[in-house]
Image (cartoon, rainbow, N blue to C red; front, side):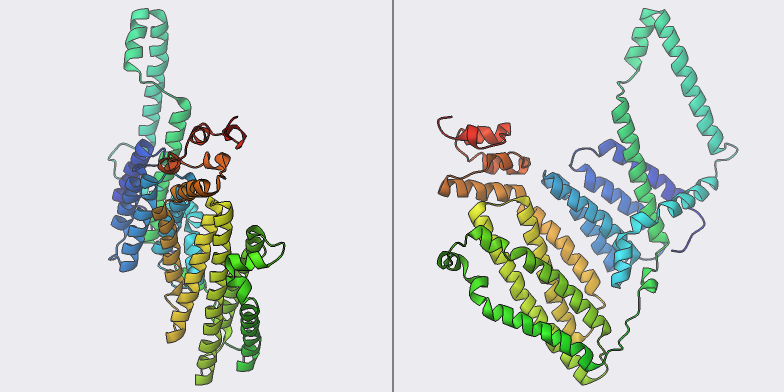
Length: 442
């Protein structure tokens, strides 16, 4: 990153105001999160000397949308995921990277910049024009004044009850723990605003450290292993076609096989296959030459076939998880893993699109956009309410329910759980750890 001389007065004041705003409105999830995010974006945008691009506009919209999840959803895990993703998006967008290396380093910007931001801010505060008043002397005078007032007011209050009542009426209620928490929030928010402004002014050049593709392989050196992998995929899909998509019929006709075993015996393996296939494709695309027509044609055919077959594997994994959820109910983990699998499937589609033009410069950003849309899609789905709704429907059909798990869901699930009959609804409301106390007659 390039180092600029010092923070400007406007940026410094904006960061302090944003920190005070954060200390005032941040607490439990609510409207405070998008308000503070908007203030941070304003500080960063006003500090940037160049014109903002469409990529910056998308980043701002994404950050505001992600932080707004806290307004509409109460699920702590979802709000936390969306908030941290907003921080990552801010770093990635401000870094303006196009390569995979640049994108990953951009996501880690909050880890890289604290020391630089501190130096940048220190140089800026030293150059503030405060006339004959030095900032250090101002802080010292304020501290000494506060100490004198507190000590003597306390002594006079102890000497005279009427003066004590006057001091009590003028002194606000202080909670030392809450005050310290607000101070921490102020520091983090103001520091975050300064960091965003610093990166906006000093745009990092992470793409320069990205390794250049070394396309040194001969055609046969990569087509043989990749073609063999495609053959394995084809054999697996062909031989296991009934297993992959047999559904309940396959479970019924297979002795000793339950939906739980059917889902568990392959879902996590298929998820690992999906992730490893993306790694294989990344290495192949980076090392395979594209000079001749034969090179490009082979790359399109083999990578395209591998992506199509991988989509079948993704569909199989989703199908297994769907059967498992229908049999044993929905949980946040199962729903989240399903969303991740869908996102990985979208990556394969994007790779196939890049193969048509043999240009994937936009791919890292597109994958990031897909991740943001996946989290926002989860928020729109309202996971806790979705889980509660299907759990209630499953209870109505089978009489089976896990009140212990449902009681741990957030308030997002309350409208759906209100449909439960007594005593189950009361057990969920009171946080029963087991189903025993909710059984009729107990």
